[in-house]
Amino acid sequence: MLPEEKLRKNLADNLHFLRFSRNPKISQQTLAEKIGTSQKSISRYEQGICLPPAHILTALADYFGLPVDALLQDPHTPNGSLLRLPKERKEPS
Image 1 (tube, rainbow, N blue to C red):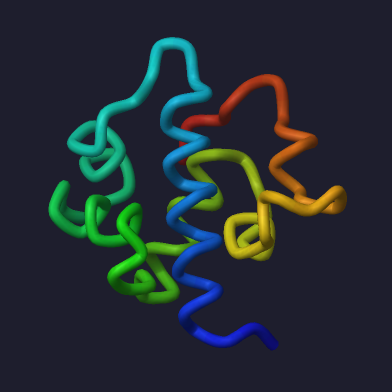
Image 2: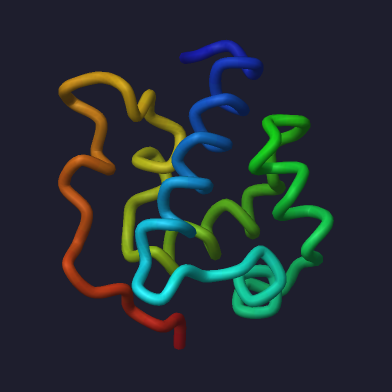
């Protein structure tokens, strides 16, 4: 298991990458509305200040069509799951 600080950094990097890799890019506000949280919370996750609660982490993973563990993996490693992003994002049901 990774220390919390490393998990926060990994999530911050991955979340920022995912928001900006979409076409069109998705704003923090739009993402927050889609997953049921606040823009301030998304900002805090992206800055690595804190980790989201489990239900928000699951909602983020569902929104981007990834498993939860992919959001927490180090994106700078060859095995980083975000290197193999799905082509299309699925809207949560």
